[in-house]
Length: 164
Image (cartoon, rainbow, N blue to C red):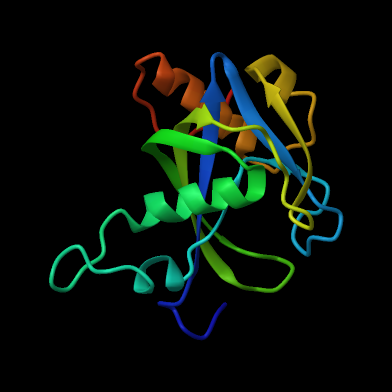
């Protein structure tokens, strides 16, 4: 267990949809955590994601996670997204390095751009429907999040659970 119970790596991810398809990306073989597995775009919150900007009120920055997610998707996949909504969250302690992490998963609509993968981060991408997603080696839980996002888009409100 980590020494500092308040210190977590914060990651935000996006289940990006375009029509009935969802964007998945394969983690580069050189990644320390889960190389070669398929996932959705996203990345770590960095303090410069807000400290480099003017505060929205006297003391606070707003929409920090949304801005971070847009930056990460732009860097990782080369596309723009809109209509970001919360989907679910998870906590983990990474087996590789023992770092505790919080992942905030969102759903977002594709807005524009052509896929341009960030070298060293991802090495392949695909737009898939739920059935096609089952044929990829996804990080554990990602298929369940895709299914959850699909239900949310159809107006159903659910919490995370294993998909059928």
